[in-house]
Length: 496
Image (cartoon, rainbow, N blue to C red; front, side, top):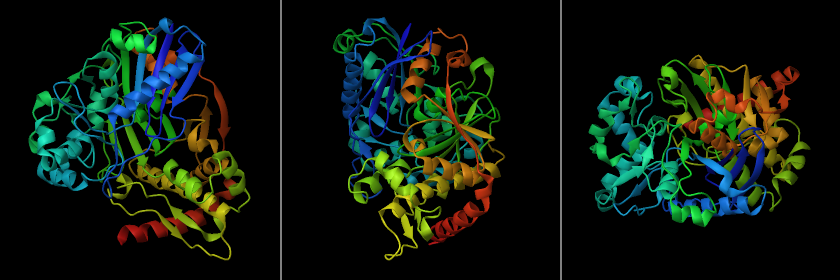
């Protein structure tokens, strides 16, 4: 049986085809080759066109088929992973009403803060496991207040993956996991939150039909099947946000297991069976892909840093004179640990949840024009990204969540030895690397959804570990001093 996975990322869309029996990746392709742009009409805004995503999805699947490694008609199920927390709004003709307000958009911070006060902090945290913050529900409330004509024309709102599923099948569905990441889900009642719907004045019928994550979300329309070379009726049987899906792709499904990713944003994700929350909502809790499967709680505690890979890309484009990432890393390796006093805060991609939804911006500190070069900036950026994740992991530890090992795909920032070693040596936590990614995880999720795999764990019996990065505890004191300096710059900027 063949399975198709689609990973709707911020930078590009990736499609992968997996042989369910062996777990082998038969083909993979992404579109575009260069990175998609994020529109920012005003400071703190971040938007992308859902129509652009759909175009890229089709082209990625067609590129995958063109490799001629399989018969597209043999694909039996489709899984979708997608960038989290985005807002898509459609009218009754299923046409998009406005660009999607995506995950790193900051415009709804104040909207969410007011709702947090109205609902009550303790009630909000105990029921939603988060403050309404800058999540999907608050973004919709911002549109309601500031773009009333758009809101008045709205038939349904969706998360990004729900939109792609709708374009494939014509059906509009979502899941408890998706609604929890949008802060629409009440974990005490296991239903849509009446508090959120009431405080924002949303009608219940603005939400899609709710189905389990692993279930039939509709069959492929004939016209789309013809365009993509697939079978009409092929079901979409899995949809999940990119971080729960990344955890799934790494077989992180049970309490105490940790996953990490470092693409445009950086995330450490821990699975728990305890319905709990961070009192300050710096780390957020959502329904994991297998939450309530077999009536068991499976919550994902998510630490997110907005400005990780996007900082590395900014350095490549504006400092490294168009060098490739493969060329940047050896240059940075020639610089001593600590970048000779240069520190970079990577928080230049909107409001950061880990900083209490403050927008502090990126900061270059301690730069010396007589000492520091291009290589220093590259290294300091990667060290700063790793330190930001350590900062968040320390918050997770305050809440009783500490990893002994983290699983990650060997991709994005984990292709850099500097970033990987800085993260491992500064935290003292080993990282296991696997040959997997979001698109492959989505494909295997589809196999779970079609019941080819009876239990989620069965999908990963052939998963291969390709490396382990162990901490060098001899470097502990060195990193403690460097991190201490970096943290003092950060806290100074938070106070200001």
